Length: 115
Length: 110
Image (spheres, each protein chain N blue to C red):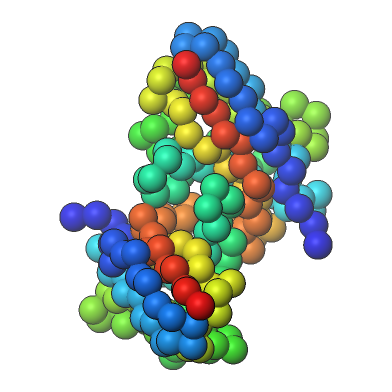
């Protein structure tokens, strides 16, 4: 079964440092997403990406965050200057069909710890 | 009001029990509805989509009441392996994003 692959599985970083979280979506999927889940909280949408541009973003996705698809296979989330409150599990997802929410596959996540 | 609200749980039930989860959503523009399952510190995984007429998948039955903006999940004959957090998830018309409830934890004991 096709998978969404995320690396690293766990990243520890110092406050103020930049981090890049990496994802390889399923190859025939066209829509890519980042979600995050703070420990004990709900899963929250950050951003969606289609056709090499952001299609939607939430209030959480401020200027400290950016996404790109640098080489046609990887999909990355960059946090420029991490804060303690950025500590969370970050899930990448992809889907073949935009709209209606069907066909999502989530990656196993990157646990980001900001110290 | 939270966009998707669920019973806080946890639900502790013995094997073989029937358990029901409830969920309400606030946005009347919601068009698609799902139940996801999340094991501890793992990614959400789709359990089943929820259709207006109600639908069943083995021991799992989902119901949707659009007028009341209410979704339910019934699990019959609970197994130990059903222990997980069950997430109510909705999608808003015109958007590809998913809005998650906080989830209800289920613990099935021998």
